[in-house]
Length: 241
Length: 312
Image (cartoon, rainbow over all chains, first blue to last red):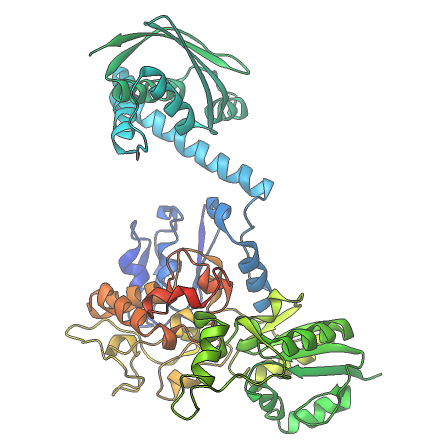
């Protein structure tokens, strides 16, 4: 559980933490003019309170620090020299914090997939497709794809390097997509989950929704073969225009 | 054996050295434990004798500063960046906005008190293109910002380096030691240009006066706000501002003030941007500030970018 500490000497009684907390963790003690942590279990570590606190009186411990990726090394070193006691995040590129951030992201992704499955049941693939279509309409496109091959090239660029895709067309209809490096596969391995689960379903439909919207066609999954090193999707492309 | 201390001043105002003399009778106690082998404010020593602790005031502005700093680094074991100029560039860091040529042209050519044909003097140490904090030139072991550093922290720093147990140094903003009551109000207007406010027990932000206390490191015991003047940010940004790229002086002050008073954040932010040379004056030549993704002080203050090199 996340532990919140309020430095009562430093607090200036502005009540902004009480106002901004999205889960109403704090209550304001008007007699002593300080916030009191009433519902610590509700805190999910967004750090809104410590960010707004004018006197830096609120500190959290036990929270995941997935923000470690963007800290500047020069700035961190300078901060460490100002007050040797302060707890610093780690600079970008640190392997341990990178792993922790990925774990954190993984937990959230799995939770999202589970919630979708519970609430939507068999409509899960549709969520992925809709998300992929939305992505296709919202990404800046520097060149409008003219041919189906252009769309595939664009997809390779957009999904890399998180997903390494190798799409190959055989004739006009048959598409084979090999997925090399994949964050979801790494996550499943780390958590001991079988490949081809809800996250994989979401991912495939996300990709299919994206390609389909870009090329004005429908992608129908013929066969999927999850693998330890690479996964293969065989797809039938049904053109609309 | 007494610890040896060597000090040097670069581009600053020598106020930090005077602050050392402000130790008053503590200085006498200190002198029992330390020996000043070089301290320009008190004695004339042209060389750079070996020392345990080196204290450097001021930013690197000229070729002389750079050479002196390198000599200091080579002659001492522990180097302290002493004061805000050494740590962040300080007020002379505004030179970062303009670049060498436009400054020299302005001072020697376009000034009402000089002839238009006057040239910059030669045979003096050359002005560098920009102003940089000393840690961009040499490795710094400790940072003691403040304009000037408070004698309490000077004594604490030196005593700690000599091995005496001292209280842990905290890194909270000025508000943490300010006695004013921060409270929410309505019907407040933004008082542009004001540094004082009528009510002495209520926070400046609540009264519509921009105060940088919440974004400034407390190395001053909140002397200004406790005595009636809004914080100008002289000890440089607080650790939160330094560490988190998305937080900035103007946005955090505007956000807090907006939430307290109902004045639109946009209005406060615009005002701080227009007056960036005032509100950013102590740290604008430090990468901590100018590398922030949304900080564009040259744009806000309409300085033509051709005058200064990109990235310095």
